Image (tube, rainbow, N blue to C red; front, side, top):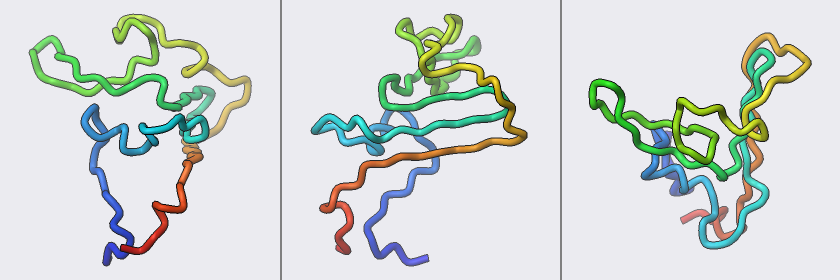
Length: 107
């Protein structure tokens, strides 16, 4: 597929490229992603960042802890990871992205 719009594709988001999805230079209070699976809900709005951690074998891994401590041992903030009274039999991913007019030009 020809890339007419100069789109950058990422195979994996990590601490080096996850900010590319958000507008860092100014405040972006619109862009967010929600994942709903079963009765679990996870909200991504840029508050929490992907961090590099070492596992018990010293191997590097990317994690997003959804808490202020940055530890996967601590509970996530219930504003970002929470249960839902309803059950969705599958996985739903919802995105709201801010796209500026300057990002829609064909280069």
